[in-house]
Amino acid sequence: MDTTLGWGSDVLVWNAMVLAAVSLGVGLLGGFVGLALGTMRLPAMLLMGMAAPTAGGTNILVSSISSIFGAIRHIREGRVNFKLVAIMGGPAFAGAFVGGFLGGRVSESLLLSAAGLLVLWQGVELRMRGRAVAAADDFLTEYSRKRIVLGGGMGLTVGLLGGAVGLILGSIRLPALIRVLKVDPRIAAGTNLVIGFVMGSLGWVGHAIKGDVDYQLLILMGAGAAVGSYFGAKLTGKVDLATLIGAMGYVLLAVGVILIWRGVTA
Image 1 (cartoon, rainbow, N blue to C red):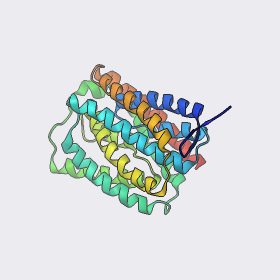
Image 2: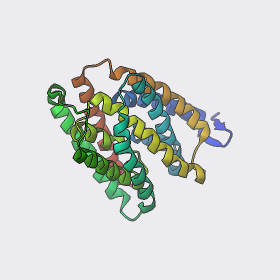
Image 3: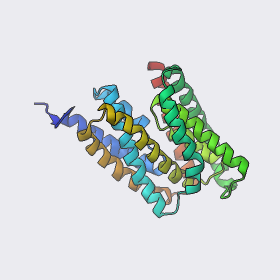
Image 4: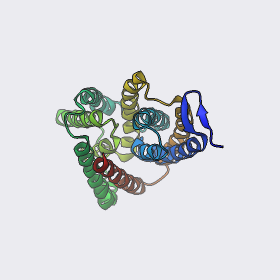
């Protein structure tokens, strides 16, 4: 006989076990490439019959848990640039706040489709130019005023879009760090996870106030995401740069397709 988790959760036990396993796998991949990958978890939660508001509220905090545990490993191994967290993250946090208020004024379907096309293109570019990017080795550690303004502008734009559609959108921020700001992909991965953690935590507050969080499921999925992301981040420093960039490209391709699908079906 099917039973639920109880204590306020109506998710079936076997569904919760499947989602915990999915969260572990997604966390492992996300920690490795520097993405929270809530976009991959959310469809699985919806397929298990969860209501969209509760799935979204639970997923965004799982993303935060995944991000911080991956980020801890990256911080320990020196792969987080806190100056970039401030340059890109500060405007992103403000943008997400404003975007949340503006959400609904522009078609969510249009925004998700546009984000998906951008991520898909970035994935194709990283796949095509991954080895060239790795071989160039022209990554920057100091930034001019122009690049600081550019980074802040990109962070603000991604934050506005993410706030409007309820996503962290690290999948847009990551390739921007690598291709536009010339950040070493390994450092981009760690830095992106730190920004994602703060954005996810802020985004979760609104869902928690409205009661759109399944805390029993959150414990299970969060545990899987934490373990996966931590050990995934450990892999980042163990593979060569071309392999890492190639993996990022494949993940961005998958995320782009999912975003476009969500946009079309929104």
